[in-house]
Length: 392
Image 1 (cartoon, rainbow, N blue to C red):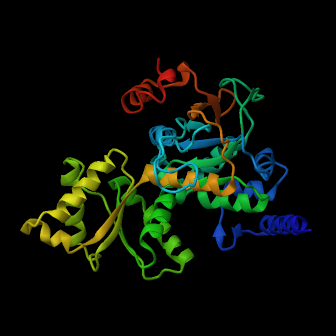
Image 2 (image 1 turned 90 degrees about the vertical axis):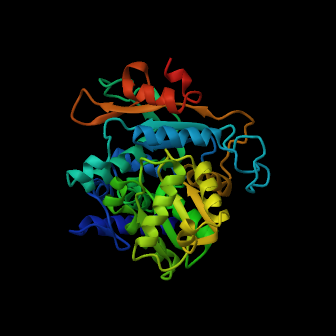
């Protein structure tokens, strides 16, 4: 009876949305592509999401987005050992956290860079890209090549989807959440910005003062204020505060940290000590950064005193890759959908490329001819062991 009521409610919501001029679900507007799926639930994409209502232990962990971010996030999932796999506590046990799982990175080369959507004023289109990629992760078929019209290859359905782009929290995640609710999908999504914010609040509690270490491009995009304000509202934590900073990129890790603190101390936001710093720049060795923080706190020098006044004694440094891995691990554990196989995580790569049939794009298993040379070199330099078989 409960399931009938839920399904009926979902149907009613969909009908109401289809009849409205401005599509909106619980105060959240949805994009054009999402609205088209809600308005016509017979579409294949909507049906694919609907098929993900059941527990799917054998499914994969899909990581989708711009190639470089996707590769680095996926590499960390393969190597991650932060938890005790028996009791789930934060304690490395020598066994990969995602042992027995299949990690499926999808390198969205066709739509990259995502920042170009914002430059062109096509934010709605970027939301559509993230929704489309979510559907592709749940599909059990993919294209053989750019000329394929039938999606003749079989692949496993994702049981968890990581939207690797920083932009996904503002452009796509809310639309996907809406579709998940309407279809009763059990597949959850992880977005890096949200994963880092979750960890910050978990470690520091309400009333935290958060520093965001990001790039100039992301700073200018405005995604963090929106995401943080949403987080504050959902947690009813109006006392929380934050500042978003793009530190100097030409210095050492320690020098960049000092520049970060210099910018913070000079800002009008420096009203209390920083509780945590979330770092989305994956070129920053987070262990070095943590050591730099410890060094500044430990050294009694006049040039550091100003910065010490703005640092909590237990200032946390939150890394994007670790936050994503933590979110994924806890979702799989809470839903009890680990494969429980004692085996090293497997990797299966996919890539998006232009369709030769129309102006759209298709998702393919990664073959040599679909791997651009710059991406090949990036994999060789940054992920030499994890993806070795793909760059021979």
